[in-house]
Amino acid sequence: MARSKSSEAWLRRHIRDPYVRDAKTKGYRSRAAFKILEIARRDRLARAGAVAVDLGAAPGGWSQALAGQVGPRGRIIAVDLLEMAPIPGVTPIRGDFRDAAVRSRIGGLLPEGKADLVVSDMAPNLSGVGATDQARSLQLCELALEFAAAHLKPSGALLVKAFQGAGYPGFLAAMRKVFVEVASRKPQASRGSSSEMYLVGKGLKTGLLS
Ligand code: SAM
Image 1 (cartoon, rainbow, N blue to C red):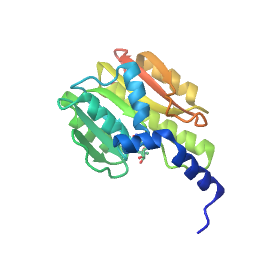
Image 2 (cartoon, helix red, strand yellow):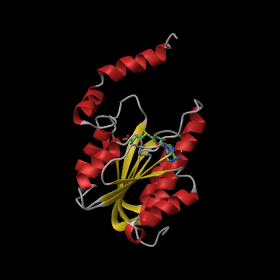
Image 3 (cartoon, rainbow, N blue to C red):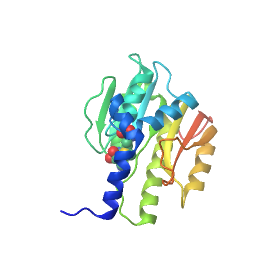
Image 4 (cartoon, helix red, strand yellow):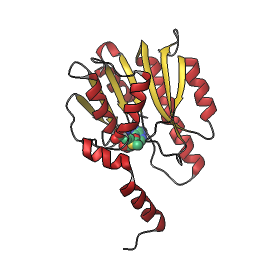
């Protein structure tokens, strides 16, 4: 079957992408691993022994990178709609994060219901309708923020991928209501052509959502 021009362009870009090659060499399941490695180093997100929740974890690049950073005393709970092959130190949960029962199952797996770090790289399946895709993506961001506000330790942090566009300034404002410090990061492995941005919130303001 003939390939479309856009899928040929994607394939060419994928083959030439140094992060794709590097991920293969280093045994990461996705090039996305380099995004979290850069942000976690810069913002000191994952210390040894930490408990982290990885939302939208499949195929597992972020979970692999985090598992390496938290070490054998740490723990990662990895959530995705899709099945994920096992990673040592990572507890997979297959389910839809929009489902309250899934969120309460994750909370139940955390020691005393609390985590040091929540990360979200969740991205909805694209419908091709920009406004719909942006609204779905923001819904996932808002749920991740709500979960983080309820389940982070006071010194904890949230890293969340959000797409710039309608609703983005409002989400940024919501992050600022929950966290003492909020920073935007565009790691080198994030394509310049993508509107994705990674927001880091640190230090919970007290007396909120939990
Ligand atoms: N961070 C991953 C890595 O390093 O390999 C890549 C994540 S990928 C960009 C986005 C993931 O979000 C997909 O695997 C998708 O299945 C997941 N996802 C989208 N909507 C979700 C939802 N409602 N609940 C759980 N996972 C979801």
